[in-house]
Image (cartoon, rainbow, N blue to C red; front, side, top):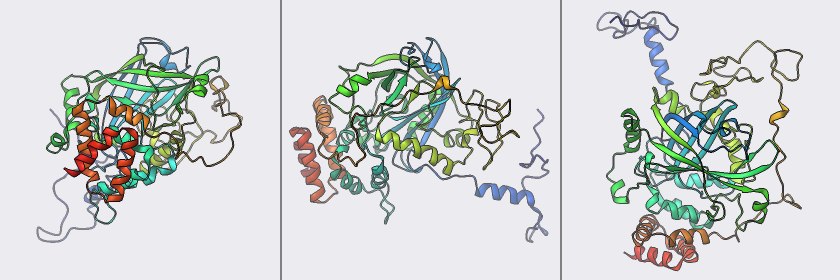
Length: 482
């Protein structure tokens, strides 16, 4: 078979890829080694900044198939007709560590889905847990700093994490999940995914509904105990997913939603927009709506998985945000992170590009003019402003206008101190449904890190456990002594 001719990045044929031009066999290289210089210069620039969070990840392509129409709740095209199939790209990740971290770290797992719909890309950017540590975005940098390496030693330091949690009891619910047997998934195929945040649907009548996504693994939940994770292959979950798809064992998840009316939200005892709380399933049952399947691995990890850019602000008509304060902060932060990390035209890269026509007035910037996967070259010679008098210029469509977001009657502008809210009941409820073995794993896992902290941090954490459940505190205290 005749091989393709090797070329430079500009397309010129290359005669020799093994030897640089030199002044004799023992002499220096000459300055006309432009091909060698091209290779070295590109090599120096092969990497982009890693994500501050979710740095270590694995991605694959697949499909979402709708099994129950949601047209009663939303005008979103991909949620209208049963049997509708939508292409997706999913990226799983650990959250706190860098690219050098371990696949089996005790850490939440990112669960991000990009739906390539006919109305644009819709991103569901969630985790494998239904809640999070925080509900105010101003604390997110502080929290992540507490989970990273010690700024002096550059080594992992669990004392920093517990020091933050001891001063921030609203994190207790998520801490209880993280330190339980659910804290280390055995594989990405064997964990659930959640939007965690509350989002909103709206239908053709202009009625709004609040909702949460739940993706339940069809492979069953499997986790590792701490001692198993300690000896596991640090690349185990990435290898597991790639090999499963390569052999045709396609992982899948059952997609479900919880839905709440605006009136139910007003009457709810729990703040439905509080990311540290779950919605009771007996009041807001899970509704099965579809099947999610992964069936194709990436061809190039860097080009696809590493440059994949998900943003909670990537909505389509019929889906929008909510008063969830953490979500509000992410609407800005994620797109901003991608522009810094990948470049201002990151949405033109094939993995991020919409598969529907793209028409806007954004122009120029790094990598301008890329032709994305859908083949829509929108860096044109037309007007780069609106309004204009061009017949072919895109214009807004009032048919997809979002209804007004409801605001609390009599609300006022202020900083809201939530220190007196109940941070303990749901954490205690979770503890009480655990088996005896699960409770003991939880206590031992907490003691492993908390035992390295000073007495003040230990006492404040034990006080939180006591408020959740007396047995919770007693087990941790015993594990600390042991």
